[in-house]
Length: 150
Image 1 (tube, rainbow, N blue to C red):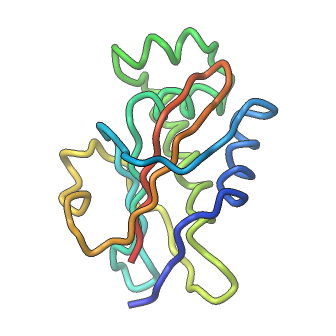
Image 2: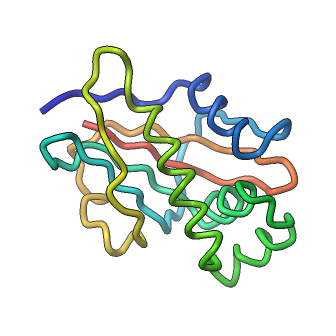
């Protein structure tokens, strides 16, 4: 099975800048906290090789920032759950984040689905290398992403 890379701060910052321009930053986190969404990534052989898990704050902030839903909407979604549009936007952000796992020496991987964490048994497996990141999305708030890869 191929080995993919955990994201670097620079690679993650480039994606975040596209989603929430002029107001985003990422730093390593000691603990990912309560994660609610899981993006699953597979290699060309259909093997699950990477995950990106998000807490509700990151999911709401990223999902709203992509299509410039007002920041107040992201705040509401932290307690009420994501709207259909914000969830579709989060899927697109996760698709963008697929690039942070790859380098010139790794094979291709692709986003296959975005699910609630309880529908992703692999999120509890210890076969993955883990990298947790705290996000600051400016007006869209803060949150946490947990990257996992083989």
